[in-house]
Length: 220
Image (cartoon, rainbow, N blue to C red; front, top):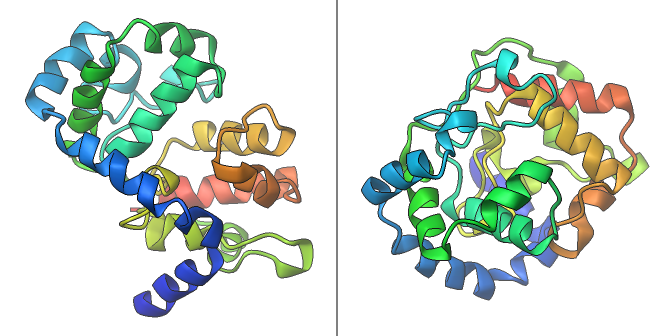
């Protein structure tokens, strides 16, 4: 079953796979990150104030607007890309854009390595949604919705080899997931490769987005 899903991912994610060479370059940079130094730097740079000492956040009370994602176990390449996008303005967030510009790029690599090394985020198994599961695993061809599993893999764990293009999303904070999906749909966020996320999410209804957020946030 897993092999079949991986084969499907290779077929359906051609635009992303076309960037494999760039992904390998990012992986080399990530390999130089030092998690131990990153632990200290993430505290010094105040990353832990919003994302938690181990990257697991602080629950709903600290993220009522979906502003603080979990970072534990997240792909280091993805973290680096997002911070680079905040620095350049390709991704917009008042606080993160300001903070990303104050951190040395070499320190960002260490910080990313630290959060990537933490025990991966996971849900508690609640909030399972049949509709969310169906959208994640099968998409909706009639509406042009590609299955999320194509790029994010079984259980939302990401697909090895895709680096920054395949972040961990299983077990992520649900308000954050919901906000990002809404922002992809509206175009408020548009920093995915070739605009693939905007294209995939655009046909989804509010109900679809809530179902996906509930399903993904509960994945163990």
